[in-house]
Image 1 (tube, helix red, strand yellow):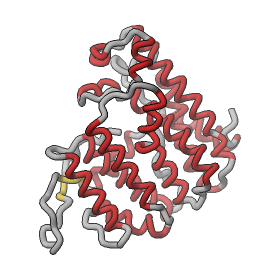
Image 2 (cartoon, one colour; image 1 turned 135 degrees about the horizontal axis):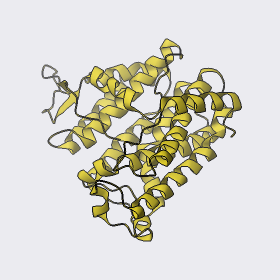
Image 3 (cartoon, one colour; image 1 turned 90 degrees about the horizontal axis):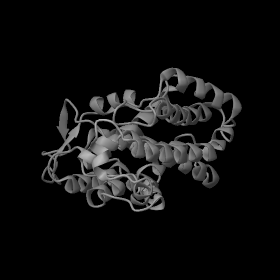
Image 4 (cartoon, one colour; image 1 turned 45 degrees about the vertical axis):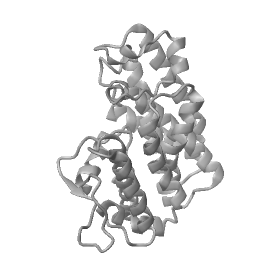
Length: 302
């Protein structure tokens, strides 16, 4: 996931702290990070949720996006910045974080009992991004999603007190699917950073070459490949959809919204003829809300 460079940044370093370390980069201010929620494919923290739950979801989103900024957009030594984030994440679990966004996370991890091992995976994923630029098979890509996407859903289930292993397994399918859809949306942007999240095996199968990813419009072969990946992601969404039926109340509202955004994104690809290069593939609000209502009522069934 890519976080655009914020208009205002603030250092992650507290120069007056006795244990201060050399600054390895600038972190976005909280407001700049949370403003990114409006561009997501799904509603991050719906206003119909209680304030306390929204506060926890905002705190998690801030952390997720901050880690993405460190791994995708930050100037300078990104690996050092990720190291600093890992140190401050540990401090957050000790109520001693220095970065404002991590200080906001402290209450959430304590009240929701979110394990450190869940959240640190996001940092591990961004470290992997610094070294791994291509994925040979779809299974290799899913292994990456297990670090970059699945912990997001697991953390959200902790917020609602429902992080039970069978539900986490369903959440993993939804989160991996959402990540794959986002990769398909961001093909050109990722390629400009020398990253390709389309499996190499699949590119060969459809006769695609990497220069296709920089075209003004996607050639027919690339549109076929994108459709293949989107269809796979859509099927994964549906295998995870029973999660909605396992939940009730506010948890059902929130998770139905995430799944609805995925369904609406897959529909947006179909409308764009699976061309994310020549078209801006974004889910429509009307389709998202229609899917949201349907999911809430039917509990994930089509």
